[in-house]
Each structure stands twice: as C-alpha cells, then as structure tokens.
Image 1: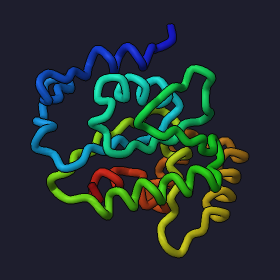
Image 2 (image 1 turned 135 degrees about the horizontal axis):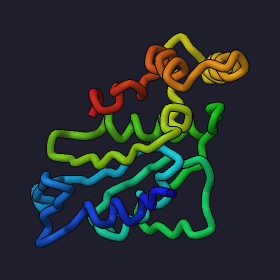
Image 3 (image 1 turned 90 degrees about the horizontal axis):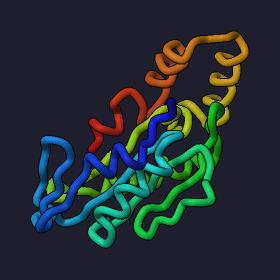
Length: 172
C-alpha cells in the first residue's frame, strides 16, 4: 500500500489564529520574523504542497529538492527543484547551497520547517570542503555498482556531506 504523504502532512499540520500546530507541538507564527520551508525527498512534492496550502503567504521562502517535478505541482510559496537520485547532480547541489544560505542568514526569531523523506541524502547533495560534487557522484556510483546497501551508502554520505546525518539541523 502506498503512503499518501499529502494527506499525512495535511492532517498533521494546522494553523489557528497564527498558531502553527504540528502534532503535539505549536509555534506562534506571529512572533516569528520569517518562516522557511526546506527539505528534500522523493515524497516531498506532496508534502510541500500540503504545507504550502496551510501556511501560504506566511512562508517567507521555501526550497525543497525533489526527484522530479510532477504535473500536479502547483505551489505558490515553495520552490521545488529537481535534484539527482540515486546520483547527486548540479541542480541538487545548487539548491542545497541556497538552503544553507537561508540558514546562514537566519536568526533565532526565524522558524524552519523541514520536510525530509526517502531519497533526501542523494537529493540534498552538499559535499564538505575538500570534496567536490564530482567526487561525491563517483563515490556514490562506485557504492551502487558494488551493491552496497543503503545503510552503508548513507554512512559514507554522512561523513562527506555538509547537510546529511543531522548536520543541516545542527546548523539551523
């Protein structure tokens, strides 16, 4: 059975009187300077659509990296960018750099909403200093060709990425 990520997120996130409710957590959006939506994953087209519908013009900027742009993608406040999967690509790298720029310019008065689903570690490609995007592509390609399991591939990605393995959350 396929998981309907749009309805899961749409049922999880509510906005009442400028108070954002996500599950058991809540934030007073009225006290926030800016609201950003960032993320990556194969299910993020639908996830971003749900968040875009709920928060609409309250979103300052949104950048979400997806596997492919879909015909039904109609978002007003979140930009969807097609990245590379299973191999990272230049488009995903540029979008990851844009996300990191948002984080670098943020203050404690800003709110980040993260959308992450399967495939995010390839789509949000952002190698650490000293490793090029081409290096990351070659490493991933070699791991795929030797039948490495996804846990092994992600273990390597965590060590060479500026965003994977919780690093983006730490930066935020």
